[in-house]
Every structure is written in C-alpha cells, then in structure tokens.
Length: 487
Image 1 (cartoon, rainbow, N blue to C red):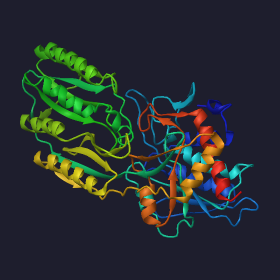
Image 2 (cartoon, rainbow, N blue to C red; image 1 turned 135 degrees about the horizontal axis):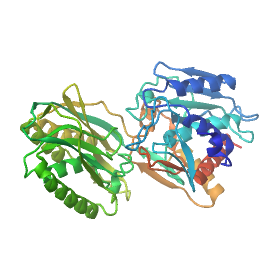
Image 3 (tube, one colour; image 1 turned 90 degrees about the vertical axis):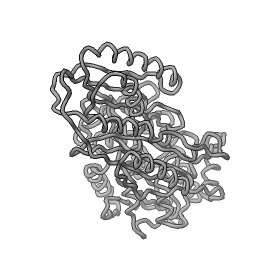
Image 4 (cartoon, one colour; image 1 turned 180 degrees about the vertical axis):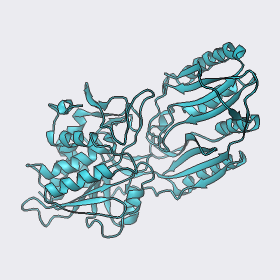
C-alpha cells in the first residue's frame, strides 16, 4: 500500500507519522519494531531519550525559544494496537503493514483494525517535534507499551521516569470531549479440563459459526447493548438440544477487551437431522434480528458439512456443563451511574473461549468506576465459573481515575477550546481503562486530561478515524500547549 493513501490529508506532519506507524507491525506484547522506529526517530532528531526495562520510551523535547521556564508537559500515548481481522482476511499482524485507505470522511484499513487507538495520539506527539509554528514549554513524549492486554507498560513505570506533572493523555475517541475519569478493570478466567469420548456411530461433523456481529470495545461499546457471539452460540446449541448431538472444538472471541463478534463449534449430528438444525438456525436468526434490530441486526450463521473426520468429542456431561456456563456467566451492563446520564458504572464481558492442551479457557473482564463494585462483579463471575466446576484465576486489575473538576489543566483546556471553536467542550468520564488511573497512582499529583479525535469501531475491523476531527485534535493540542507555556 503506497503513501498515496494520505495524499492531501491535513495536517501533513500528523498523517505522515500516522501512515508510518500503520506500516510497522505493533501488536500488544510485540512492540519491538515500533520501539525501534521511535529510537531511530529520537536519534535522527537529536532528542534525549531513555527506555525502561519494560519497553516504555520517553523523549525530551526542548522548549521553543522564550518558553524554557514553562512547566514540563507530558504528551502520552501507547504504541501497541488491538489486532482484529475479519474472517477470510489474510493478514499477519506481526509482519504485514496495514492496508489503509480513505473512505469519504474517514480513514480506515482493509479488513483489519486500523490502530488509530492509539497510533494517532503517538503520531500527534511526534509531529510536534517538527511543527514549525508550535509554541510550547519543555515536553516529555511518553510512549508506553502493552496497554491493550493488561497495561503492563504503564504499570511498570518507575519513579523519576518522567519529570512533568501535567499530562495530556491522547487516547480518547470522541471529538469535543475532555475525559476526566475512567473505570478500573480486572480479569477473571475460568479453566475446565476437557473430557472426551468417542464420536457416536453415524455422526458426521458440521461447522456451526455465529458471525456478522459488530463486536467493539468492551468498555466504550458495552452500553450499546450489542450481541455477544459466545452467548449466541450457546443459545443456538440449546435450541437444537431436542436432538442427539455432540460438540468439539468450540471457540469464540479473541481479545479480553473486545465484545466477541464470532464464535464457532464443530457440531456432530446424524445427517438425517440436518434439516432440523437448519430450521432452528432460521428460527434463531429471526429471533436474534428482532431482539437486536437496533444495536446489532446483521447476525449470520454459517452451517456446513466438514470434509475432515473427528476422532473424539466432548462428553455429554462436559458439553452440558459448558452450555450452562455460557448461559450463567453474566455479560453486559450491570449498573449505570446515577449522576452522569449515559455513563456505565459497572459491567462485565464474556470475552473468549479458547482451547489449549485439552484445557478450555473462558476469559472474562470486569470494569467499574467504583473499586468495591469492580471487586463484587468479579466475585459474581468467579462464583458462576466455580459452580460450573472451573478453576478460576483473578488478575490484579488496575485502578480507576477519579475526576478532579478543579483541575487547573482542565480549566485551561476548556478555556482554549472555547476560544478556538466558540463552543464549550463536554466533560466526561469513560467506561474504559485509560492509563491515567495507573499514571495517577505512579505519580501522585499528576494533573491529567484525556482527549482525542473521533474514532469509531475501535478494537474491531470496522475501526475508522475521522479525518476532519484529526486536524481539529492536532490544532487543539497546539493551542493547549501554547496556553500552558503562558503565551
């Protein structure tokens, strides 16, 4: 894919850097190539930089003339991306560049996630180094690793790695909004030892797949009420349970922080029951499309005979227990915030089913802006898993970020926004795990806001970045840095 994809897009500095980032593979936990790009960038620009044991990098950018005594501002983003692709899309996230293109008012990728979360924030920070009309005090460009799969990068930051106490987190996805708080999160995982038996005489294998769902971010999009492919698969199997069948090779979802878009299983039945299964599939599709006609109406079910043979299947007892677990483990919004309209307080996501070494793994994640509620919803999920006989592991989690409405940074940002755009910005808390929570815990007294351009479909192959809002976001950043420099 050539750089023609960004031809004519403004501002050029931002789009050039973002395009370069899209051409460098940077999955979570495998950020070596993007970190090498950052090291080379710093060396080419003669910037002082350092890297910690975890892989985080901070570059020091000198103040523009006359602003040397202004407070240090930390511009922060994470360098990893969620790697999701559509079924049938050939793409190796560890080696292949993204195929990016303009689609009307949007910038997107072909069949995969775009990585605007958080590549565009990283690009904006890097662009500031070469911005000829920028006015700013000393800057620290902080680039963290592995945000998407546990925030291990920011969690590994040590005291003194950054000196600034004003931080611009550029990892939000809604134009005209300053985020001032976020939810904390925790993972709860169940493990089941698979029990198998011989395939029953006369049974043949069919692929049964639920697909076509929107998926999306398990925090930002959970309030939309979108369908969960794993839940749908369990429901569909329950609908055909009046016939004798076996299952094996169940799988669903791919990421702890994404609502599962697809789930599949090998269904073993007598071929004489094929018509019955197809009838139930049609019934399921009719029901699902009616129930989810607004949030997720495009559900599809693929059902086809497999060419391969199957040596063993799950025992009837194990299969029944698994289906009960799929039904019992909660998914979705648990409580809404009573003071902020539209804000989810607490939620849980049934995220993945995977099989490895004859162990089935059920992955879930919980979020809440209230620490005690986060612990309790994780306990609810743990109880359901344990009642189903699963061994359960609960992660350490990460803290939320409590809003500070008296923040001097927030006051300045609101003033700059109003002066530039003749309207007031919104202030919100977000039902997602921003790194600000851990940054605040690591560096007490850090004054922070989070903002960014409009990104839709984050964590899914539908991810797209609004072109006009990207220019607005960058101009706002320049205006804010100028104001913070006292100019």
